[in-house]
Image (tube, rainbow, N blue to C red; front, side, top):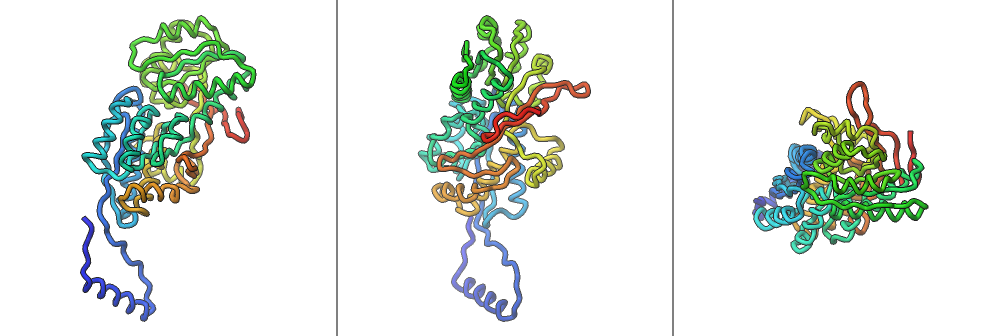
Length: 395
């Protein structure tokens, strides 16, 4: 509830300021408390991306707790309200409507699956509520609306990185297996375009549905095509099944995977780490060694007693940019939208420097990783990088 001031109180305050100036005394005048703003967070507590949800949740909570612990921003403090998307577009839409219509949030962090962000976007547009995604990479998100932002680069970049990695390794033919949604199809199309333009050939494309107990039929098509490399776009739960069954079927082709499986949390399913041994992949980079990244890692470990998983730092940055925008603009959706571009202009975050373009997108670079055995344990080890200027550089 905003504090109301009478004309008498305002006059007294003004006189006090004059007296301070006359006496030559300089003080830091406390920010006038303005109230509490509700912030929504839609994340996959259940469903195929649920193994990563703890890191997503912790990243956003850390940002909110840090800001509130410092007294808020611009006089505003924040209440965080979380809703489960179930990694499902229809549930994401329901969660978004609930946050806006029932809870009255002023801004939403999320979603993570691109299909969920695309389902939430028109609802946010209709209600003039800013949505900032930490992890939705589909090229479709670029045109999702004026109130839609993301702190992760588009798969227009990641698809190029994957194609150039395949070409760098000397692969001439590729088989593709992807989730049948915006995330999977978007990466499939970019990879195919870039790979074939450079002389490669995509010999089979397999799109699969989430939630199946077995993918042996789909994998049989890949095995029959016998490509030089298999390009995979999966989430953790379905990816775990796919990799284990591929090993059972004796598929010998090497794999290049997108970031949907690029977290060692996937090794928690029995047999998955062994099945993934030697696989390579890409994921958006985090600037290890930067002051912002180190501060985040130290704070995260101190608060939660663990290292953050994939996209936890992006979740932190998405939340922090949103909170700073509210601090500048207040609770008005249109004002927050305008402030997002101001805050997100060379913003030095835990996951790197962020500058929003006119579509709410940011640039980015990628780590190239490989599953290796390190001192008796399976690890996803960085073996190179990709940048738009330098292409693939393997170590």
